[in-house]
Length: 121
Image: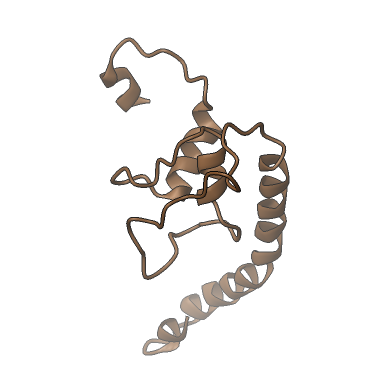
């Protein structure tokens, strides 16, 4: 937003900056409430593995920044506990991606006739 203030301060630019700042100020609390609801519901899902008796190995990749739109709570442990296997070592499957896939498809996924049907989903 600081860069948006540099240079050409025409009225239409300033007109859009004020509502954008107001929206930015009110967005975090509802997102935090949604994260709490997700965590509450996630904790009620049946588990296939107990993380206390079978701890996860260290992550295979580290990221400098958390993925965009990542929830405020840790996902890796619950996402391995629910299906019974840690899928985060699979290239391209970070915890937020797996969270979406499990939320959309679940563990009892529909049977796709071919892998192309699955990929197009």
